[in-house]
Image (cartoon, rainbow, N blue to C red; front, top):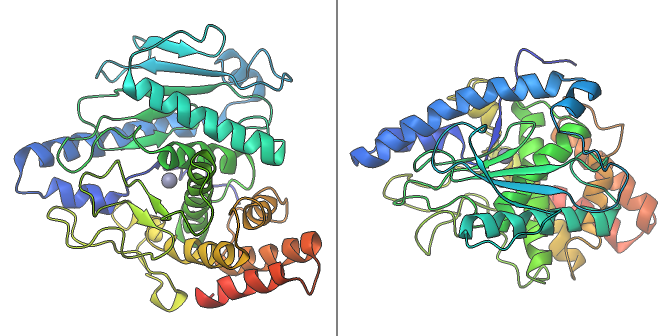
Length: 361
Ligand SMILES: [Zn+2]
């Protein structure tokens, strides 16, 4: 199903969080959230444009690398210097010259970009976002205190955060891996960004984002805390999302209240397919497939990417995964791929079935 009339940008901070901040009694937070919300409208148009570009147009726009075919990462990092245009952004770093740099945000996205590229290449032989060596373009210090990070179909963009609720969106490798994975999904199943398909789109980004962080930190399923965005959100008790216990990433936050994610299908939230409804709760109901993955990976033991990650990647790149897939479609495909890879009566198949069963899908 083609849905070109409806193409939200992919950002890490959902509309329900920004709405809460826009209503904050703290004027500084409220003003910054209004600005961050405005930016998301602007990026949406960019994303529609880039998604509809032909291969030729993408080459002219510099989205397809001239060095395509070489199995090396290609990345450019720019500093927007708190402005909101990309043309005047300064090149901080690129893979060709590998300059020394002092920018913390710049170094963060280099580390995150490298960890993400390396994850997909070493484990799955995938060369970058499009598997054709796409140049990874990252822009830091976008706008003054913007509360978000985006994948707009062409580039990753990071705000510095308002300084009270959020700090720099470059602070967590899982956030960088999450955004980059939106690019991978767009080039594979291209899951609709609404309702269950949208929640799956978000879930794939969280799942690969957390695995990229776990691999970077050499953490197995037991050592990982399974939290996304724990540094981005200010305060030791807060993170954006928890795959291990959806609905507990932040509790009684003075500005944001409590994490609304369900972990199980009986708590699925039927929300309106509008911006204020988070397009049918794409960042909310993603807690359900996230939890199914966590239970599966935990029961398999070891490193999440060795078995569970392999199965989920096979599903994400399976031509049988429809653009408007539902949770049960992904459940069935994960079982099929687990059977194919590990055998019909394997412990791995049991773990996958157990994962979806605990998420009540
Ligand atoms: Zn996202």
